[in-house]
Each structure stands twice: as C-alpha cells, then as structure tokens.
Length: 216
Image (cartoon, rainbow, N blue to C red; front, side):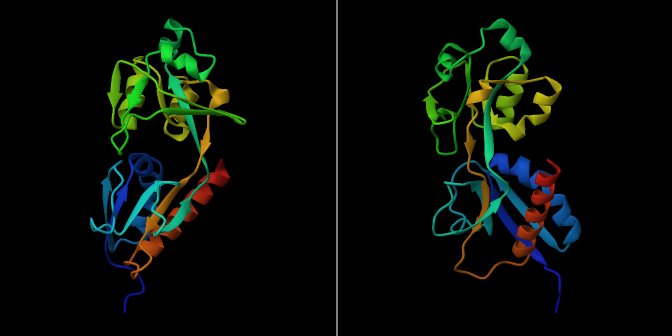
C-alpha cells in the first residue's frame, strides 16, 4: 500500500484563483507529491464540476453551490480601481464613484456573460456604477495590461496589481472606496470519496496561504 497519493486531479479554477492561488502555491504541492498529476482548467464561467468531471473548483465566496463542500482559502479580498499615472495626468481623477461615468473605463464581461458593474464601499455607503469605456474584455490580465498602457481605468483584485502599485506603474483610484469582499474557496462534492491527492492539496494550500498571510 502506498502511503503517498498517486493519480490525477482535475481542477476548474477562475482566472484570479489561477494566478493568486494555483500559480503561487501549486509548486510546493508538486514538489511534495510528485506522483499526483494536476490538470487545471482556467475558466471564469460557472461550471458544474460534477457533470464536467472535475474533482474540485476554486471560486469566490458567495458563488459556490450550497450543496458542495467549501474550504476557505485565505482572507477577505480587496477590490480596487486602478489607472496609470499617464492616464491620471491627462484626466481629472474621480472624487466619487459616479465620476467614473465621465472616464474611459475598461469594462469586464464576466463568466456569466454580463458586463460587470463596479462596486464601491466606504463604511456603510455602498454604491454600484455602470461604467463605460472604449474596450470590454473577458479577462483581468488583459484589463491590467491595458490600464498599464494608459487606455483607461481597470477594476480588479488588489492582489493582482500589488507590485504595480508598489512600483508606481498603477495608482489606486478612489482608494477610500475600495470594497472588501468574501475570500476564495476550494469546493468539491461531499457525497463521494475524495480522489487521491485532494486532501493533501487542501492541506498544502492552507499551509502556504497561512504562511504568506503571516508574512504580510
């Protein structure tokens, strides 16, 4: 009998989860459990992981189906609107969320097929803005690249642009309005036996994310 898992894990992961969770922490799992092959499908659509043959998925809290087991991955997430210094030099920076309607915003079409409405919160004041702009994309990476190029203002997780904010390539717009939303979760069907490696993957992700959070 093997005391280490062996086999293949199939994961369905949204793009933010792929960059912030899988890309950062999967190397440790692969190093620790070399007999487990991991297949990752990056997809922002809400996929039925059971019917499509996946062992687990990663999605934002609040979007995980209630009949599945959900394991929290890290803390709550901060969302920000960001723009390049060049764009902000050429335009009057917004002072309230509604000012964004006068700006070139990089719209995002979600995995559900709708154009995302940007959400903002300052203490108990919650606002939602239908932004407009010259381009609409379906992935965060492209929105960030366009913002870096000065095309307009992008909206994304702060963790996705932390390095750009640190080096000054991007600046947070309306920083006092940045909302804090539920964390990501890994989820899987609880009615069947866990595939080999999934329990170990959850343990590694928990250890890695906890260690990262402690480092700040």
